[in-house]
Structure formats: structure tokens, C-alpha cells
Image 1 (cartoon, rainbow, N blue to C red):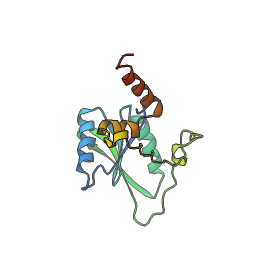
Image 2 (cartoon, helix red, strand yellow; image 1 turned 120 degrees about the vertical axis):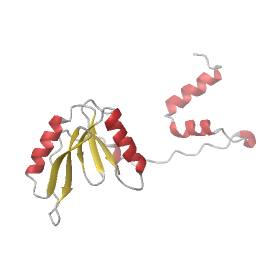
Image 3 (tube, rainbow, N blue to C red; image 1 turned 30 degrees about the vertical axis):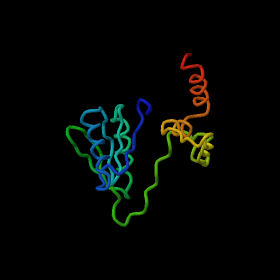
Image 4 (tube, rainbow, N blue to C red; image 1 turned 90 degrees about the vertical axis):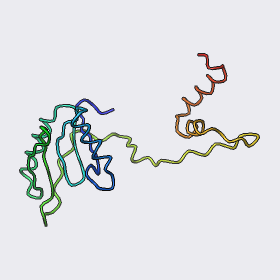
Length: 155
């Protein structure tokens, strides 16, 4: 779902409480075409597109920022920037966003839990797959599946 030149941010890629994130991250780098751009204490930033333009822009921004220390490293033949705050430095000014914020942000819309389905007549519990479908699928998909089932699975 990531755009061609999008950047993926992976949290806790080196934290001891989630070793699977580290394994998946470096597996994607070594075998999945993920190119590292930058790493910090707990974040890994990479792309399946060309990492050079964003890495160069980031390196230029970091060079002019006294609050952040950085260096370029090579890991398994992949170049990346390693970044960390300088001790005692004020928080750095962040670069301006490249893209305008969406007018209707999902973050601004509170997420409400879906109501639990009413108990079935006769008290027989629904199967797990059915409960998940009712809870998770959009109503239009659920209605389509129910209608298809009533028709005997024919379209």
C-alpha cells in the first residue's frame, strides 16, 4: 500500500522487547528489496524506491542542524544515515512537510467500537469467523456476503 517512493517508518526495530521487528526489518533489507534511509535509537526509515534523493536531502538538513549528530554507515552493503540528538541540545526544528495535510484527517475522527451483534435466536453462539466478519467488515461487504449465502453462494 506504500506509494512507489514512499518511506516506511518501523518503530522498535532494535528494542529487546520486540525482536521480531528487528528480524522482519533486516529480512526485508537483505531479501525483500527494502533500502535503508536512516536509523535512530528506535526507528528505522526505508523505502522500496530510490533512497538516494531522500538520503541526500536528509544529510543536507542534518549538516545544518547543530542539535543532531549523524554519520553515514554501511550495513550489509546498504548505505544509511545514523542519527541521534546531541546531549543538551534543544529539540531541532523539523523540516516543513512536502505535502499538504488532508482536509479530513482520520486522526481527527474518533474511532468507536462497533456494537456487538444481538444474540441469535435459540441462544446458539456464532462461529468465530462470522463474529469477526460482523465486527470488522464494512456493512456493504457484509450485506453482499449475506445475500450471496442466501442465494446458495451463486452470483
